[in-house]
Each structure stands twice: as structure tokens, then as C-alpha cells.
Image 1 (cartoon, one colour):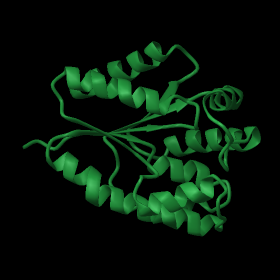
Image 2 (cartoon, rainbow, N blue to C red; image 1 turned 30 degrees about the vertical axis):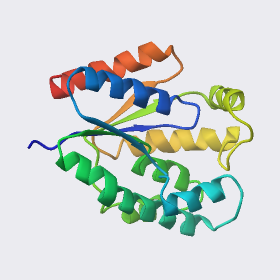
Image 3 (cartoon, rainbow, N blue to C red; image 1 turned 135 degrees about the vertical axis):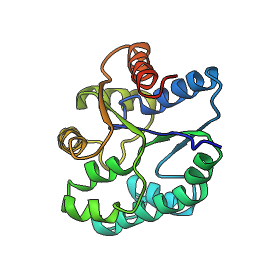
Image 4 (cartoon, helix red, strand yellow; image 1 turned 135 degrees about the horizontal axis):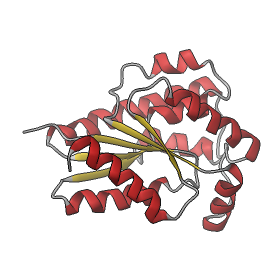
Amino acid sequence: MARGKFIVLEGIDGAGISTQAELLAQYLKSKGKKVLVTKEPTNRIIGGLIRGFLTGDWSVDPKTAQLLFAADRSEHLKKVILPALKKGQWVICDRYILSSIAYGSLDLDRKWLEAVNSQFIEPDVTFVIHVPPKVSLKRIKGSRFGLELFEKEKLLTKVIKNYFDASRDFKNVYLINGFREIEKVHDEIVRYLEKQFKL
């Protein structure tokens, strides 16, 4: 059986990652593909710890936080992503290594972050959906109560720059303007995949 494809969607909260993941899953299913949509941090035990410090329920130093992200990712790959790819499924993941680089670089050395994540497989393609921080925060405030740890305008501006910088050093990363209609963003993702994988 042919290995499935591993597609990652990245960007700051409010960029529309989850929406695009679901739309892409529907499109791929219409093409006869078996699809798994997943996300990081996961809903497993380590992912629950991560969500706790992101929402301010408990505190942890930046290096420990990134090691937790890496541990969650390792389990995610072993238990979910790699088995699905082996079965020929197309895996769509909401956040992956670039999130650790983009957010982790606010406090830590980027080379250290890259070393921690160097043993994990690279996606077949990563789409970084970018929107201005003001747009991101407006969307977040309109959809839920409270902001998470990194959701402040100045920090988000730095995170976006980190995404752009990291995207130049990783293979198969495609930048997409997310400050448009949902359908236009989806269409650009689909066009790229049709060209890349002959769908």
C-alpha cells in the first residue's frame, strides 16, 4: 500500500487553520482519499499539561515547555500520524514543528529548538496561513472567552516574523495570505496540492 501524505497547516491563532483543515479534509475525501485530521498539542495526557500552562492554570519555564511539546509530538507521531500514513491515509495536522520554532524562539535559541525537533519526520507540505495580529486578535475575541499565553499583539508580530524566517529553512513550506475570504484561501491550498500531487 502506498504511503499517505502528511500535510501541516500552521499560523497564529485566528488565522483560520482549523477551518481550512476541515475544508481540505472534505475536498480530499471527495477525491477518494482516506483522511485523518489531527492537531497539536494533542488531547492526550501530555497535551493536557501543555493546554494547562497555555491557559495560565500553571506555570513552567520555556525550555521545559518546549520539551513537553516535543514529548507530545513524539507520542502523536508514534500512536497516530505514522500508523495512519502507513495505512495510506492523508494526514492533515493543525500545527507541528514550525509552531515550536515560531513560538519557542520568543524565549529560546532557535538552533536548540531545531535540534530538539530534528528527529521528527518532515511533512510533505506545510502551509503557513498568515494574518495581521490585529485581525487575529479580533477573530479570537469574537469566538471565545479569554486569551491564551501568546495572544498579545507585540508577541504575535514576533511570532509571525519567526514563521517567515523558519519557512525559508524548511523544505516544502508554502506561505498563504489568510486575510481573504475562506473560499479563496481554500482554493489556493487545493491548487497547490493538485499541482504537487496530481490530484
